[in-house]
Length: 189
Image (cartoon, rainbow, N blue to C red; front, side, top):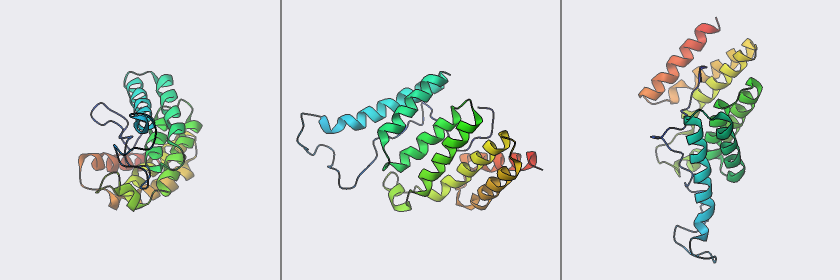
């Protein structure tokens, strides 16, 4: 997309991990739950397939197909898988043609991050810090508001992004977020 985006979208080198732990009380892999062989893996495999289908369609420029795949994944994840819902909402925001729809999906991504505890995030990756999501999430919202002709709301979200920059590590991705924040700050002057 041509606008300022924060969190990375799907790529062949960065697939969605849709098989992370969803419920600490759920049976471990291979533990029998009563169905036929492999039944317990079917929902996870279906979610992974939906994510991969959406990612492939997005990479090929088939936006409507990608949107449909990620929307189906959004529904399949359910309310309790907020980590993946945050990622999927972010991807869906990038795939919207309507700026209001983009804003709505970015708001959903932020709401999911707000409901994700640091402890729960670390069940997906031990070093994962929820705080590091916020610069990108607020940057995306600022960009959305600017597109909608709402510069005051854009400045408010940009300020939130700036206040959360200290959560980012020192790496290339974080540098791109900082650069995008500076560029948007210049546009809002």
